[in-house]
Amino acid sequence: MSSETAKIPPSGPKDGSFRLSNANLHRLPGRIRQPAYDRSLISPGVVHLGIGAFHRAHQAVVIDHLLAGGTMDWGIVGASLRNPATRDALAPQDGLYTLAIRSGAGTDHRIIGSVLAIDVATEKPGQLIARLANPATRIVSLTVTEKGYCHTPRTGDLDEHHPDIVHDLQNPGTPRSAIGFLVAALARRRIAGEAPFTVLSCDNLSANGQTVGRIVMQFAALGSRNLAKWIEAEVAFPSTMVDRIVPETTELDRAEISSALGMIDAWPIITEPFTQWIVEDHFPAGRPDFAAAGVQLVSDVTPFEHMKLRLLNASHSALAYLGYLAGHETIAATMTDHRFVAFARQVMQDAAPTLAMPAGTDLAAYSASLLQRFSNPALHHRTWQIAMDGSQKLPQRLLATMQDRLRLGLPINTHALAVAGWMRYVTGTDEQGRAIDVRDPLARELADIAERAGPMAERLAPALLEISSIFGTLGNDPRMRSAVTEALAKLYALGARQAVQTFQPR
Image (tube, rainbow, N blue to C red):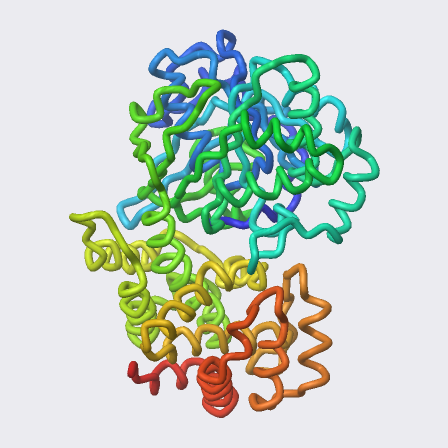
């Protein structure tokens, strides 16, 4: 649960300071946990596309644990598809970084050593394709955020008009998108007679394995139907559900962690104690013993994925939009207001009837744990950060539940207020008249609609609901239009804090 966007960190240590690196590990205080293995013996088995904060707080930590157990051929080569900042920060550190696990009881510091190298795709695309095509690479994992799949979130299909997709079809040897790199490498392995790697999506997408598989095959078919058929027959795309809260690292975080280490770490990662990874166990090319690191291996991840998207991610987004509008900078600050706690709880309760979970699943206990995690005072997870890319997130997090509740004849006013919060947010002006830095692939279109409609719910809500790439046919449902317009009118009339306070589930 983290954006891949971050500021470029400081370029290096101050004069006279040590930098975190292999050579300086012996200088760390004894309370700092270090890699319990010889890093010089590790060979790569995983290439990870989108090596941002979330991967380094989650999957890379799992691999670090397994390396300590003697599984030495599953090291990670990371790839940044756009920005060299992560590579520039970690290369002088030999790929090492600090994982700072924060709770009300304090901070636990752990040095992660599973990342062996980082490529920057824009600098040497051929090198990244070669890494992916290398037979030693048996898993290619992804955390490129929803927008990185170059697809239409409502349908889950490839967006053939996406600029990166258009470029990659015309320039298959120098792709820009994750999809383009995957297909280029798979094509090379097919020609060489090599077995394909497993593609492991770790993004918050509905049926993420099926989704990336469909997109990859659709892209491949535009260039070669035979390649698409080979991918369909030979490549595994297991779905996953991943869960850990990972706030953006701040300059204060860097300073505090460097002080704890007694040396500089240019890009540490902040996270919470909780971590969960559920994976469909389908790896024809092999996998490490994930279960030994606490990963839950299942035959079908779908129920757990829906549980997370509709309980955790939905309430997180609702708190982000409405909390931001109410003037709260972080989720933890928002949760100090009992009115927002009650609203988040109601979002989860309304989603519960739409879930079909395995026997023994305690949704009430899971929901209670989420409220506790959101309230962690040691995590400064910014509402603005979570609010990014809402046009890509709404279909999975909020709209799917609304559609199911309408089908069941149930009211949708809880989720309508959350959607209205997004609508009010993307106008680009907050309740005090200050500009909002709206980060979204559709930001320009959303701003144009807001400018034409003005701050009038009866005009703005229907106009935004007509964006078919977000709302599909749901935007035309009169029950949807009525509920969202009413909720948006309440937001304009009362403001977010008062609207949540007067909210009554029905």
